[in-house]
Amino acid sequence: MPHIPLPEHLPGITGLLEYRLDTAMPIRDLTQILLRGESSLTEGERELIATIVSSRNCTNFCEAAHTKAADLLLGESETARLVKLDFESAPVSDKMKALLNIAALTQKSGKAVSGEAIERAKKAGASDLEIHDTVLIAALFCLYNKYVDGLATVAPADPAFYQTLGERIVARGYMRPPGGYSKPA
Amino acid sequence: MPHIPLPEHLPGITGLLEYRLDTAMPIRDLTQILLRGESSLTEGERELIATIVSSRNCTNFCEAAHTKAADLLLGESETARLVKLDFESAPVSDKMKALLNIAALTQKSGKAVSGEAIERAKKAGASDLEIHDTVLIAALFCLYNKYVDGLATVAPADPAFYQTLGERIVARGYMRPPGGYSKPA
Image 1 (cartoon, each protein chain N blue to C red):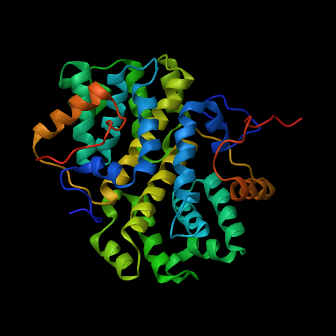
Image 2 (cartoon, each protein chain N blue to C red; image 1 turned 90 degrees about the horizontal axis):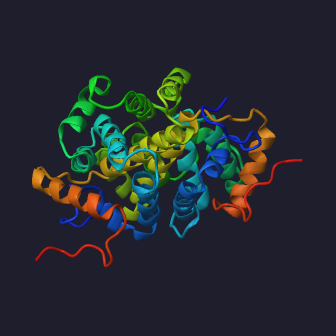
Image 3 (tube, rainbow over the protein chains, first blue to last red; image 1 turned 90 degrees about the vertical axis):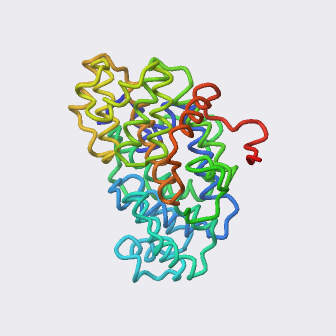
């Protein structure tokens, strides 16, 4: 049960983003810019960064939602699964491995992001902006994970929930639907 | 030296917020709403939450800046110092001790925020919204700390820098000054 009263039909982050709409708006804006705005990283690659951070923070709701979004964007479900298991041997580019490493280090601690990890990413062709965005996406998902777990929100067990949520994220992005969320009948 | 090229006259978070203005805007908005918007917590109390989280993440820049902001808002420098040392014996209300405990647990991990910690805060008179805001402020400062440290920004050693920054934060809040920051002559 959540630590504060949240609508039962809106589990995980969805209820929190309706609880306080004024703080939700900039959180949604930042996510939309970073994960769906113009970038030399694909939307699927950016969802993989969100996924590995949420997975390492053990935030089931966010991990399941962004794994599904990555799966839908990549058109298969092996890459996200293997990235979470061991990104060094996952079927992604050397540049993505280096960026996932930076994301994983950021999840541990900002201070863990070493000069060596940055050099590796630059040698693999990552731009300064890609490195910047990787750190900021990882930091943002640490915010999300702490927000979702810190208030003890509920993570549904039914995979169908995340299928629907993933489809919505892919089709409509991270902004609030006009009129909000109606309560199911 | 920062991991990406940042203007030398803008250390810590200040250079990052100028590096990518589109992502900076919602980060500034969220901070302004949470730390300066309407709240039953004083601005000084909210700066103490930012301070304890930054202190526990060992992010020198953010710790120094928000300690100074708290000092200026509280009119003395003992409370912030003692809160960082041991909030349980610091000269703050029982409600603030319970909220600082929630902030410190959120810094560790969202899952560390126990039902007991929430009950303690409620018994001490904390509202659901105060609990929500405490978790979100703590999560936001974990984002800031990971962003600032993950890109290896510089923290000036001169206390005068944080005096000036603290005064600016207290007087003008967290929004970008019109026209940005001019380079010193």
